[in-house]
Amino acid sequence: MKKFLYFFLSVVIIVLISKVYQSSLPEYSPKRDYVDLENEILKAFILAEDNSTIELPEGHFLFSQSLSLDNKKRVIIKGKGMDKTVLSFKGQTQGAEGIKITNSQNIVLQDFSIEDAAGDNLKVSDTDTLTIKRIRTAWTGKVSTENGAYGIYPVLSSNILIEECEAIAASDAGIYVGQSKNVKIKNNKAYYNVAGIESENSTNVEIHNNEIFQNTSGLLIFDLPGLTVYGKNIKAFDNQIFDNNQINFGVPGSIVSSVPKGTGVIIMATKNVDFFNNNVSNHKTSNLAIVSYKVFAADKDLESGSQISKTASEGIRFIDSEFEKDKGYNPYPGRVYIHDNKFRNTYRFPTLSNDFGKLWYIKNNARIPDIVYDGILPEGIKLNSNEVRICVKNNDNDSFVYLDAENEFINFSNDLSLFNCELKL
Image (cartoon, rainbow, N blue to C red; front, top):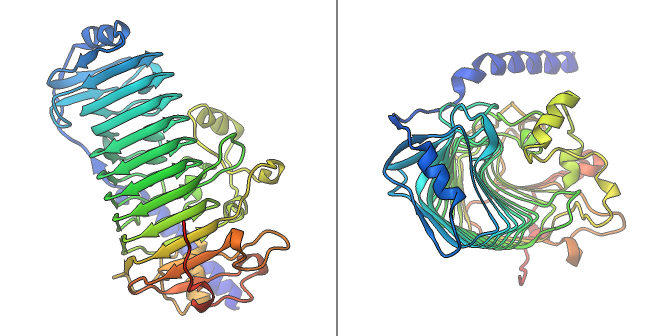
């Protein structure tokens, strides 16, 4: 009887969620008055030489194709301000990206907005020394799965600064740095995205003084399988991460489509993570979760092959149930230090939109935890051995859950004493 009632309740909740899905999604609809300067601006990109500046005028400009630079050095692309210079790719017919930069050095982009690209608004790859400053990327109208995956998207690059930018309504991550090194992400705003800011398979990353709010999940620090580069040495500090409870509108089967709504921070499979002096508040699933990739692989739910083929070509990362074939990949988090943060929550009860929220009703007296650790360990490795050590210390108002997820929650516990330690990172 209890099982039937639980099943019935779950069905009712799913139906209600599906009915309110569209009406619950936010909308970003700035007023635009487009001017036709496509040929002139396209020509400026095509003819750009090393040591040059592309001056973008004030106005709202509509483009049918991508703007691109390849194999350039010391080029500045400069507008008149995020609100004054707007490059829109609404109705784009050629290319996927709004702006695409490849194989370059010493590139600066500043003071303009990029909107509504078919794929990613700004993609930079194989570039050394990149500054992205006061750039806004957005998809206009009601937030949708049809929006492009990434707003600001540097990958396979080095010496990156992303500063004073805004990222709005990406169906994967608003600000994403992948397979890169020596990165600073600071003083940005990210909202209405599935993931606000994401560091993936990147090394020597600093994420600080950002406002991350009204996304599905706020900050993701991930390492994923199937890539040639893996990440470590991440510092996240002085960030404001709050109210990330948006319905998940990620592409089905993608990693972020499995991110539980209402999770402030997720640290997954990454090593040497120092998370300190952050304010994390008001999340309906948990304020912060430390998990193995196995948690996501167990939840694999891919759509049709055509959908997978389409989105894979756009750079979206999918759940890989065969991740163990990647012998260079370590799916477990290790040497993670959560300290001197402030955790708050005004929500009294967890969401019922995901399995974690339901679990809190069953195992945690219907309380939303601040910090969750799944406790999944490599075979033969003991809890808090040096390579998988998790330390949680000197946080303000932190409630804790140890899941023991690999053993069907047998040793589920709120006891923080085993993790009250320090790490030198």
